[in-house]
Image (tube, rainbow, N blue to C red; front, top):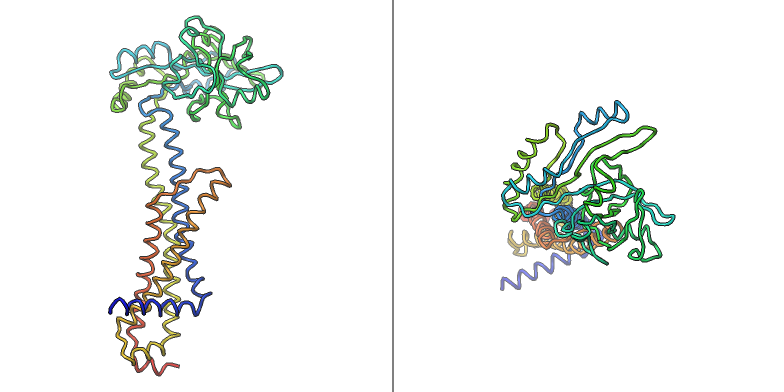
Length: 428
């Protein structure tokens, strides 16, 4: 009996809303946009956070990165004079000390990063020449697409061989097979032995390089011994009639730990060991694991901020529903009086108006969910920005829309039920 009465009340509420279709649709718009914005904004935030975390993970959660940086005092000196020798940064002995003194170290990967132009026939492309060891791919996670990476034999004999990133190979060899040719860097030729797909980030670039507007995958890999032999340890840079001479043995050392749990304990130990042999502040230590945790915390804050901003739309939509329902109560005062005179109880009137507000909010919520799911796909297609729709965000947005209907519908429903039947019948 109660079920039949409730269904009758729902039917009556829906019928009342259908009498004013345009007004009902306009009232639902606030809920539709609110639900849509919650889902879409959280999807965009989730996608941005995912890309940031994946970039950090590619650096290696069990890796510690140590970069050479130019000390502030050397920066001032290089601006003051011309041709001054700058001696700073990491050394080969630093790598040996870390390998032998820090517990839990699996491998130490030294790197030299030199800005040069690479040439093939008439093509010339600025790139990063990275001198490193054969196990670079295992530590950093490069994917060998064709050919092979550097070998132990290449390192021992300081062979003039190189491995190109796919992007660099496409710019140098748009119509030819790179593995059948050699490229020229500075005064030397290097035989191309392989192609790799770059999976790293901007972290792989040296801080001092001017790389604005350049692709991030313009990397050329050569054996570390070849780098020392061909380029030496003293690098000269010319610009605008002046030149700068630097002596940097290593630009980066990547320390791979045996286990992730050893990373955070090794971080202060590495800093202590290096500080003993570096009077100047000429190195920095980056721990991707700490960056990852910070990114996760930032993601949580970001989601809260975006969700709060989007929830304001739902709040505005709820206020709109309450406003319309209060106006509806005034318009239907006589109807309410007739129903009360025929025996309808207060709870029947309350249920009728509450059903109408819930229908508006739930209907708007369902439409908002559909639009909210489609919006991130449109954003991804137009901007190539990654978006991730989470199930919890859909249920959260829809749940809030239903709650808004109940909360903001209670006052108009109670106001309708509280009308005096006699006064309501006299209402013109």
